[in-house]
Image (tube, rainbow, N blue to C red; front, side, top):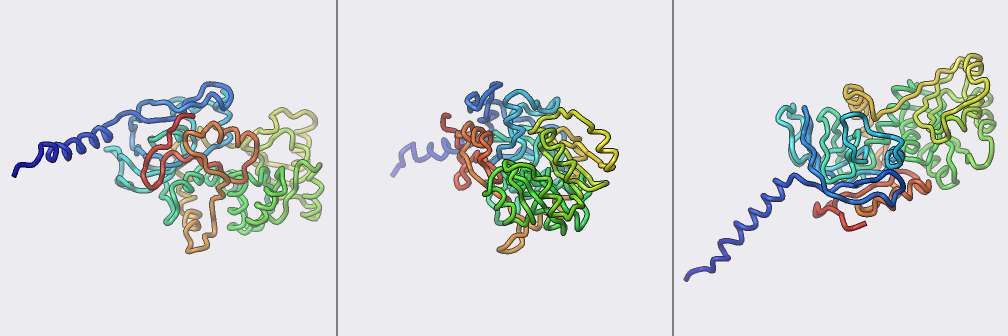
Length: 368
């Protein structure tokens, strides 16, 4: 008995459709026009081509960072030659490995990475040297909230801040992604983190993670409280994303010959008065640092150090010693809401942008 022709054609058709998907050179991404969050939209563009020793990652999750909102407004462009697409981190699976790669990664590996841009998209190209394995048992959605804040916090404390065991560390924005990561890294290093934040819930979160003290900056001068807590000595290290508006209180709070790491200017960048004389009298060392525009070798060194010293602590049995703090997860097509949420300072920890459904791999790209 002869079978219908469709019985033979259907499998061939399915293979053909799958091959078209694999060969597709287009992807969905978040496009922005300079201005407010309402200018974000999902569009189609070319999948990134691989450059020297790069890996193509199929993105399942990214996360919202303050730098993304600044770039959207036109204040923080990507480094020359890098992706104009928003997104400074991503987690996903290896889709393609460059022909000149060393063999460290294979197709299907679960990975995460700090990016110079490109995370708000279905695919992103990443240098193989700065890829990190996703901790065993961790979802790709949660992993999307690790690279930027944890590598930033590691750099601020251990590289720029030269953290030493026993240090007292004043961490501003203690309820932010970087803040919650820095508190945990301080505890692991045997240090005493003190935080500032704008709500009691954020202060309580920091304390739950190990902060020894916390002060609400909306309730007046916190420098006197820091001095009281440190018995008049002042803190050894300040991790500062605020800048000018905190300058006087920071100067009161830091000990003689203390270290002060500046990585943001949320409170402005212009300081008047006797700034230099105060620095001289207390012999303070101020270090300004950013991570996005650093050379690849610098990022590799940071990634290697974090991978060796910190990454294993995310998967230590049923009670990991380090954990990403995820505030909210927004689907890909709700990216504008995610930006508004960050700009309203509602989050304690990370705001994750889920690009794909983890079970099906389907992109969440309904209309905004």
